[in-house]
Image (cartoon, rainbow, N blue to C red; front, side, top):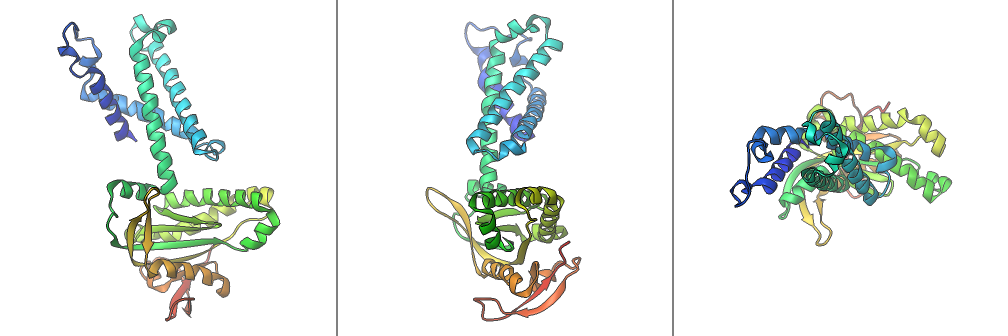
Length: 336
C-alpha cells in the first residue's frame, strides 16, 4: 500500500498547490506548503499515511468486524481512518508543529488541516473499497479483470484443489441450516488464511465445497498446492476446542488435486467473472469425489505428484473416475 499512498499524497499536493504561485494576487513564500512539496515530502507523507492505513486495515480485520456486511466494514474503516488521522495530527501539532497552531482551537480553525483530513479519509475509503472488491473476487482475478487479460479466451497451465466437507449432509441435518451456515463460514475463514499463505486463489465456493487454483509455477513452488491443504487441516485442529464448543464436532475436509492445460475466459455482462474450461477442472472434481469410495482424505493425480518429488506420497493405483473413459493413476498423502 505504500506506493498507493505516495501517489495519493503526490496528487494531493499537485491538485491543491499546482500553479498557485503564478495566480495573480497570491504570494508564495519559502515557508509555504508549496515550497515544502518536494519529492521527499511526498514519499515521507505517503509512508506515514500507509502506516496509518495499516492501523485502519487492522481495525477492519478484527474478527467481529469482518463478519459484518460490506457496508458496515467499509463504514468502520472510514470512521477509523478519520479519527486516527485526527488523533495523530493533534499529537503532531501539539508536540512538533510550530507553536502558532499548537493549541486545539487553532487546529480546528486551520483549513488546510481539514482539507488534508478529508482527502485522507476519502482515499482511505477508496483503498478500503478496492480491498473489499479484492476480497470478493480475489487479488489475481481483480487485476486480470482490470487489465482485460481474458477478454479473449487464453490457454493456461493451472492446478486446482477441490475441497468438500466430509459427512456434510449428516451435519447439516443435525445442526440446522443456520448453525451449519456459521460452521461453513468459520471453515472458509480458516481456509482463506492458508490460501493466502501459500499463494493460491479462491476460484469458487459451492455450498460446503471450495475450489482453489494456482498457476503451475506458484503451485509447484515449495509444493504450495499441497501445503495449503495440509495447513488448512492443521489450523482446524488447532481450533478444535472452538469447533467442539460451538458445533459439537471438528470438521474434516476431503480434497482432490490435479493440474494441466485449460482455457480461461472473461464471461458475463453486468456481473463479470473469470471462468475456466477444460478436462483439468472436471478431473480435479472427480478426484475429490473418489476420496469417499477409496476411504482417503487427500488424493492427487500421479501426473501432478511426480512434479513434486519432495512429497512423501503413496500410490493407490489406477482409478476409474466417473465421466472418464480411461482410468487415472492417483496417489495419497497422510494428513496429520
